[in-house]
Image: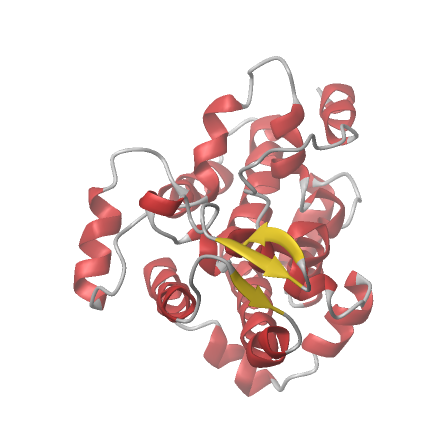
Amino acid sequence: MRTILLGIFSLILGFSPLNLQAWGPTGHRVIAEIAQRNLNRKANKQVTKLLDNYPMAYWSVWADNIKSDTTDRWTHTHIWHYVNIPGDLQKQEMEQAVNDVKQANVYSEIQLLCDVIKNKNTATDEKREALYFLIHLVGDLHQPMHIGREADLGGNKITVYWFGTPTNIHAVWDSNLINNERYSYTEYTAILNRISSKEKKEIQKGTAMDWLFDTYQITNEIYSSVKNEDKLSYAYPYKYKSTVELQLQRAGLRLAAILNQLF
């Protein structure tokens, strides 16, 4: 089982016109590293054991990399990375819209993965695989364009120009904004993890649905501020720098809160 997983992990992602790799490798590794640095002693021991002494950051992009697997074993998981709902809803309306989604999605799967991990009867390999997905999907829950609208596939159909290069607004939020900072994931983690314990506890409050609504509000703002064929350059990363960093902090600290409760 471990040999198969490591082999799949090493696959290189192929090009797809629909960019569904939320935050890209750097963002997901930042989130995982922030989480690991905020685990309590018991949770860190159990997580490290379950991951065979690999750091969480190592497995943080596994759930994206397996999309390149050709056996169709993981095809059903592709829809786990996002949820499409209408825009500009009040919180209660948004909650209803999310609960009305028929297919598996990022919100529903996070709940199920937690159940798998905390179940004492779950086989170790199954629990390990659930942890791989959980590390990744909590990050996806905090990427605004993964809480997007079905009509434009979470912004994939909204063409923009990033410093003159054609792309789409989903890709901008996946990787371009983070890569624009030119930090390694450990450098960015060190910067973003330097907030007070009080601030961290405040971020960790609430439920997964509350956190989803936090992201959804940012999603609505992004949609309202961009249109097809927009030319984005220095002003855009300047405007959204603090938003991106807040979402990375939120995702990492909330993932830590989940794992501290599970273990």
